[in-house]
Image (cartoon, rainbow, N blue to C red):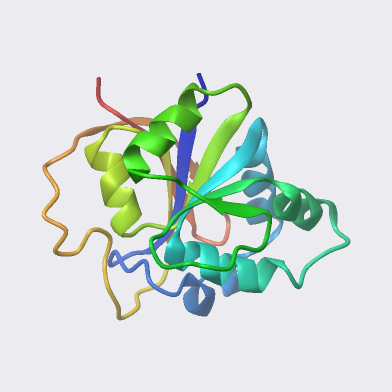
Length: 179
């Protein structure tokens, strides 16, 4: 069975919106190396609509380096009821998004990764479909929506699998849902 990994950038005060505005000063060799190791064994992406649209616009213009080429070629499944034109090697999750992800996890292939946190993440959390979380906590505060703000989620406890600290001040907490 495939594993679903969620990777999310978050500020010290829990903001998740527009990480492209506050995270770039911390992107360095350690950041890149961790991200590359996170991608080992990953063969596809599962994305919400907002992350898909932002990533597609940003990544389609990048090519020629090994990371971008692999990232762009990887199949992507997107939770969306509104996207009508698909690009960036993407397709919609058909029907109920949670059930579609469950079927993807049961299919043959490498692991799946999901970037970003929003409404789709809440659905995955509620349906216990994420096997591993990587919360990248950046040493910055910003104004904006926080993770699961007003989402009405049930209390969910996680086990700490490991912590990685970068010289830049980023701390990644690797967690899994408690059994």
